[in-house]
Image 1 (cartoon, rainbow, N blue to C red):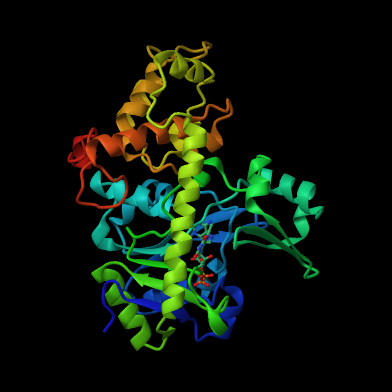
Image 2 (cartoon, rainbow, N blue to C red):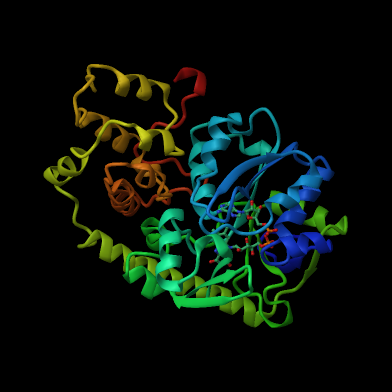
Length: 399
Ligand code: FAD
């Protein structure tokens, strides 16, 4: 019987899934079983679009098609909480299994608190994440540093502090991620500051860290985090849909150590980005940044936590944002900030879409870190912990 806190090495018994998967295809096999056994009605995952720089959220209800979602897209910078809440009614109408990076899972946790997602109908299959790379910059970096045509790349992997790029002709090159990041490339700036690499708020967390010995690269490490996760994994194993082995004790240790190293690195980037750790920006600095706004509202559209119809109506109103006038009233940014900053998961969506290059995620993340400290709040970690500032217990019908 699988139990919470159990750990496994796992891989798929299906050769096609193994070949298509990132590290043995355990995630794909679990998702396939959940569909075949009608434990869920659909799976929300990510698949490769036109190339490896194009990560497409996709809803699958045919178990035969789940194989299309295998593999890790390190240039997949989307936050899957957004389509789950906006287009799938927060899993209220059907049972959904969703693959989640830590920032996806954390955003979903904050949405569960706001009753925008139904946790009872959701299974979160977590994948560890050491960071994602912005697609356009990644292409530029591959040309500049690796002297490779970005369209020839079929593999991108971060391992042992190096970014490994492989081509169709099996040519592989690796460069220190530190070197790339010092030059302004590599992972997104929000990912560099992120301390959550293992999605412990999900039902299961799967990743390659800690898989050592002959199974290295061929299996994935699973940590069981909830009763739901334990039940699902138990059923998957008993049905013969997944092969497992106890992890090597040394592997468990290595996994914990890599996580610690990554947390330390994130803190280093936080100090660098936030200058003096505890210093709040003054009002002029905020106004300076917000005055770059061209009123496209991309940040509001991209943010997984922005769903209020009232906000959209108010901020589009001529009172706040008269036509033909930029910047808009700073109240748009102030209200957004006050409304969601305690639940901001540093997912980077707002900053990524901002055409005026306002460092929105950096501003939110810095404030969020301070709020977490002041209120002993841990954003996105626990559905039972209410955010310190936001009102979250309204029914959606009351909004
Ligand atoms: P597969 O069976 O190949 O399934 C992969 C699943 O990941 C699919 O369901 C797919 O939809 C989903 N997926 C792919 N790309 C994305 C994306 N961009 N966002 C959300 N979901 C996605 N493990 C570590 O131990 N350390 C790391 O630093 C680490 N970094 C990662 C970074 C990213 C961006 C991703 C996606 C994964 C990372 N992993 C990391 C996890 C690891 O790469 C494997 O996903 C994991 O070991 C499971 O392997 P698998 O063969 O069972 O997965």
